[in-house]
Image (cartoon, rainbow, N blue to C red):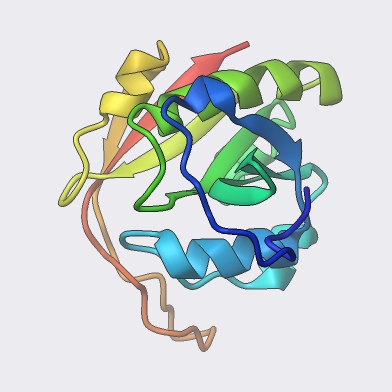
Length: 176
């Protein structure tokens, strides 16, 4: 993906079907996530790249990026230890992206992940219940698996930054 290097005017596509899905660098994905993500703009590069499985995607149209996604081995130990899961850690869409970009992108990423990681059998993602309805997952045929109670991640034995959100989350799963 050309990372918006040209000074040509940014033109938004009319449909997500006009875009291309490409693998991108973690650095670029993090920059765009910081710019566009509604609740979790801050990411840590070390937390993204030190996983056994990781892939970062961008949706591009005319050399401009309109959405990014970051996938890694799950954070939850119970899932990470099973070695068959991949977690959608962030999905950030630009304000000028066309309607249905998120669902289109999820469909394209699932197909790519099947080829790239044949050992992965399940995908997982978490929806912030305070601000999102889960429409993108339902539209992409994911199944709501669980509701997790929001909590602060900080524990006395580890110094961590304050959480960006502690709202309840819906866990969505997609079986490949």
